[in-house]
Length: 64
Image (cartoon, rainbow, N blue to C red; front, side, top):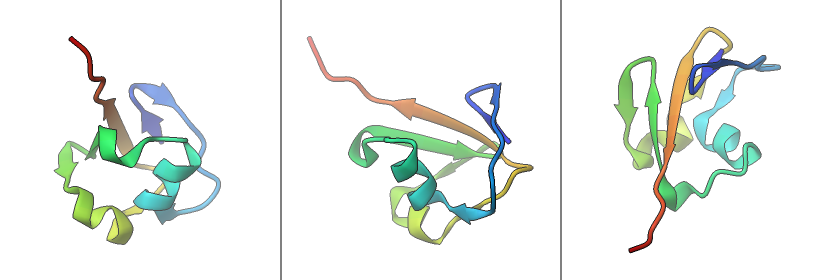
């Protein structure tokens, strides 16, 4: 699996939501692209990720 261009070993297939929670992502402040497709937040709980996938996680930071 590749996450933001870095290799990562996924121990077992899992649900995207659980994966993001385990990575400590603030779910209300991220956007996720899985294998080149943006995944809507309402599909995180039903989207499966595998070791062959490529994920881009973008975190939003507020400020001014």
